[in-house]
Image 1: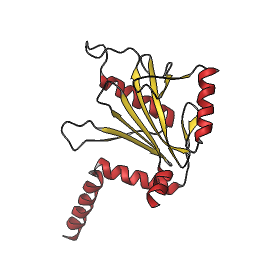
Image 2: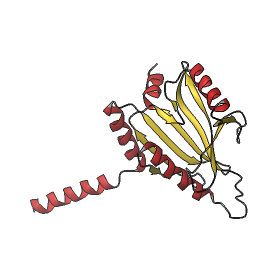
Image 3: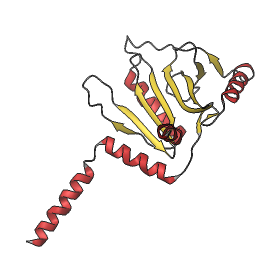
Image 4: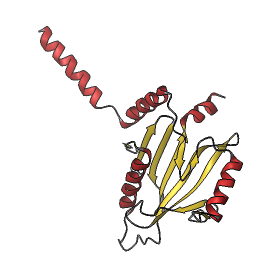
Length: 194
């Protein structure tokens, strides 16, 4: 009798372990990564967490005038745009601008899109772009993404990856772009504690 009861307890425990919601898995992952104390400050294209506002402006000026890599433009007009040569299945660009807290970069907002894509005729599908962007981000940040299903019927799922202090969230925009939000979790925690 005790063996059967013990077996049922073990099976119940394993069942509940396996059915953790993606949200619970994410919270556990974030807690583990933050507890590691490891910092990953690289964002992309040479921009990093903790970069001072003036250093960012100087860097962008150099990337524009000398390297011809950054330019103003893209869907947001006032953000920066950089081509993603060979990074995705089709010619693409990333449109981005950081969030500064106390004069340093703590977050990065970005949009990734195929150049000159026409989505109406079926040539491109937003789901294909989403998978393409997730694959690129996994290559950039060397960490897989966790899918978190939306609790709302008409909302898209989001994809999250955490490595040390760097959280990367990827999700579809209302337009044919894919949104990317990169956050320094240490800076976020410091801001919340103030």
